[in-house]
Length: 135
Ligand code: ADP
Image (cartoon, rainbow, N blue to C red; front, side, top):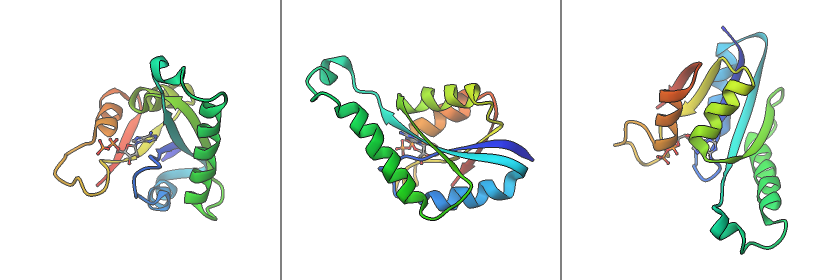
C-alpha cells in the first residue's frame, strides 16, 4: 500500500519501536522502505550558548545509539536522527523524503485521557501524507 513509511519515535516515551514497525511492515508495499526517526529537541540559543562545545552533536549521536538499541535486531529499517521542534520537524521531514504514510503513537504512555499528544496532533493536522495513529 505504501512505498516509504515514517515512524517517529520519542526516546523518552516507553513505547516499543517494534510495535510500530510490525504495523508498518503490514502496510508497506513489497520493496517499500521504513524509516524510524527521532527528533532531538532544539535548544533555544539562550541555553545552547552555555552548553559545552560539541554537546549538541553528542546528544544527536547518543539518540542514534539509543534508537538503534530500541530497534534491537530489527532488520531492513533505516534510522535517522535530526534536530528541531518535533511536530514541525516530522512534517517537514516527511515532505522532503517523499513519505507516503506516517505511523505515530497518539500520546505518551499513561496519558490515556488525551485524545492526541501535542506532537501527534500537529503531525495529524499538518502532514501532507496519510497518518496512522496508534492508540
Ligand atoms: P505527549 O504530548 O503525550 O507527550 P506526543 O504527541 O509528544 O505526546 O507523542 C506522541 C508520539 O509522537 C510519540 O510516541 C512519537 O511517536 C511522536 N514523537 C513525540 N516526540 C517525538 C520526537 N522528539 N521525535 C520523534 N517522534 C516524536
